[in-house]
Length: 201
Image (cartoon, rainbow, N blue to C red; front, side):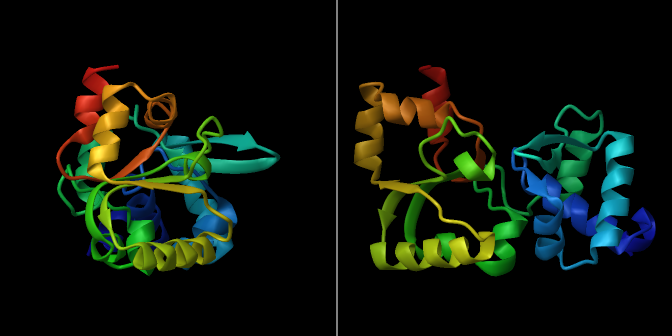
């Protein structure tokens, strides 16, 4: 039904990928792998979305990246239609769900999880993944290994419990402040930890 409404199965898959992953950039071959569609079809639909203004593009290291344009006038209604079906304070991207269904939840009590660094092309960040909570370290290691295989690259991650996060926040720890000031995609924020952090910036 929705494919008929929007004219293309590939276009619908692209919209779901982009609107479920705000602040995250993808290159063409990465997109084709994630949505499992032919590259010619992907290129054609990317050109369509780009011409409308739904997505934007830029080049880094001679590679063209695409991401959703959050300034697009219909961004919010499209996000409600194509974004992740989870609630606002518990966001997990479709790209991660496709391979790691409920994996973040299975790690333990995840209070906060964000992608940054290589995921959002913000090289000012010293890590790619931050996870806060009471986590099973063996499951976390397995999760990171699977994610690295899925993404095709080595990933840097930081794990801290809620007590350490609160302490670092309280003393305005440079590492945490710079990390949370970087461009990031929020996967989970159970108790609005980032809201409290942003208020104190």
